[in-house]
Image 1 (cartoon, rainbow, N blue to C red):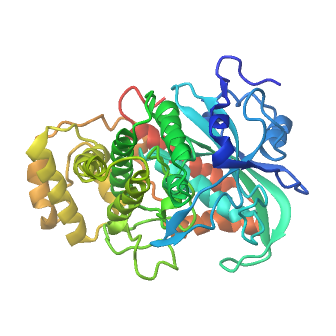
Image 2 (spheres, one colour):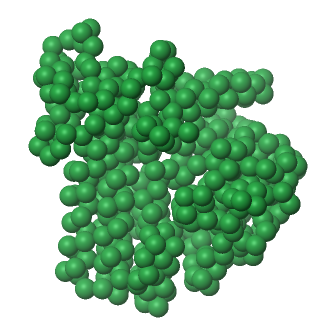
Image 3 (cartoon, rainbow, N blue to C red):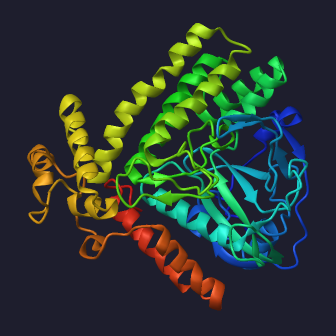
Length: 458
């Protein structure tokens, strides 16, 4: 099979913990496998971009094994809090992990599915994914990647030829199977299950596995793990806020212990800096509203701390948990300065700039994508009213992080608001016209190049 011999580096690390973390499963036998999206840019990082279309469909639609990696698909076991209510009846219900590779940047990456069929955890669900859900996930991951948010990446979307019935979109609707490339799939909920079952041996083994394979540390210290997870998830929360992104369902089974965002359902990008903006129609109390996301993620990390209490003392765990708040305060400054395209000056000056910037956003109710576009590099346009005067004075000494020398800056800012997402889906649904989707991906990637740090755009 023509995988790239220079880049393809398979791993079987998950087999070290599969005996208590996962169950072997089989993929559904789909009527069709029509490739709708193949992400060769992501595929090049693990050496699968050289596959022919027939081979791509076989491996990512029929799930023929990739060479020398996991022995077969595995559905992960976990529990979790869903909207703050504990649920012990969880697990991968319409997906599985079927391959691991070491990427060009030396991270251990996993290929996981969405819509690949029923598992022991399907809970009477059909285990399928709508084609629209897959398209929405492509748009979410492409936009987040461009905006410097740690995210899984959509590697493949294949239409499968089934008619699905759903209560939240017109039915019957088209079906698909998606493959995501992710820096692990171990969730906070994975640890919660072990704590619930009082499995001390499994807890110690999972701590050591995550530290070794996802943090590069040979240790089984639960306090060290909690410290690292607190710092990584604080970075994720800060970058959500800087991106104006609302995940929608920040349950503890949706928080990856590597601090990488994944599993996009009712996501939205906020039109403005509106703390109460929600993504999910069923989030009627606004638990996961835009402005509450740092609190929600910190609460989930608290559940990890509580779970690790099975094998560690409370006092050092509490001290490690405190790293979240400290890290978040630093990370939100870094993230917003990055979006503004200015180089940090340090300490109090940077914090004051970010505080005044957030205040101006709240007061003006200005479109986030427009403001970040106009201010990139540290200049407040003369057309901005007196609401922005304080920011104009504070940002003047800042040097640009990079020049506005990309063609992107000669056009209009890219956004990913819900109306545009629906507009991209409409011609696919009505006429099988994928042109708007491909055009949008190209424009979003161009934006990512324009925003990237110098030397990183390629």
